[in-house]
Length: 117
Length: 111
Image 1 (cartoon, chains in turn brown, blue):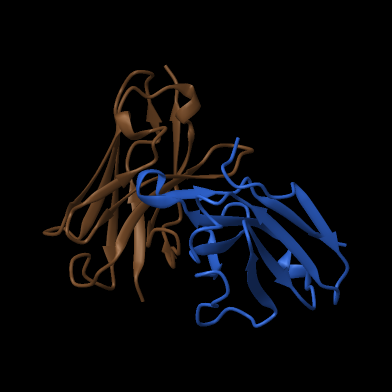
Image 2 (tube, chains in turn red, purple):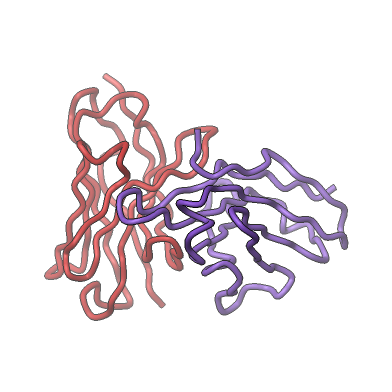
């Protein structure tokens, strides 16, 4: 059974860069042709797709976030990561990592991130 | 504002059927058979219920079904049960520049 677990700081100051890591267990992140995605949900709002990385390292991002987001793979650690720069209060949300892109079949439990000074 | 339009809420009594619509455009739902539906209970991870418009992942009840007509996808839940009460989101492929879009979510209340 594939499991995903997000890790990272729960609090980020405005203008700083958020760094989150998703550790995958129960399967190799590079052994199959999967997308690995980041998705977030702000309080009282719906799900928002942030972006994805493919097994070969190619990426795709939400156009509204593209200028601030980098997603990458670390196959040696079986992890993938999210970096989001210039954080503001509007980026306060629960951040999920997931396997897949449109059809995400395995998800992490979510990592709450608050942007505040 | 979400790219896909869903009703904010729907409700039904146990045993009844309900349908949640998800309206997009000819650039997303209308062009690709790549629509997924998620069930999301607060505080838990979303769960994939339907993918590629009408396919159910292993372990998902046959009470859940998906369909598409034109630019609108639909999720139907038959034989409503109390545990079906949750938020439901549609998700679709929107082409090589936008990639993935979500609906705003629909809160299902089982009366």
